[in-house]
Length: 180
Image (cartoon, rainbow, N blue to C red; front, side):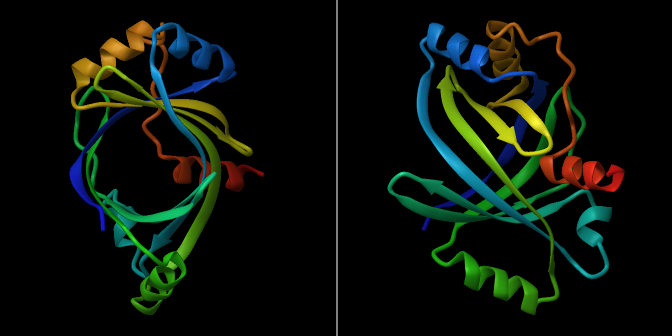
């Protein structure tokens, strides 16, 4: 069973199209690790303490050619910095449906379910995700070990001057649904 505790440091930028970024990544000799369909289920406790404390709890299912995997992730409160940064605890689960039942039995409710297509690239010490989400559009996320590494990759992609989005996809979708 895979376990991970780390600090997530990432820059997220909305882009009109993903094709030019994929072409630029190829030109830079980045490695396409894989393409995946992800379904993220976000949970909330009855007192909304996760939201009040700027935290998140989700189960992510990933559907790849040769099967399905699932992880549980807890994201802690954001810290100040140039890019979004927060503690992240993640572990693989064998049975996502049973994990959902455990969360619900503990008083958590499903808050929102998001589906996205993601292409995951590797360049330098960073992971670059090209994401496409229904209703929200196209985004690039650059996650790395520190702000300097992220800035270097954004510069290589000519995105260093683009505005960053600090909201997660779940918050963006909740906001979008309230508008419609």
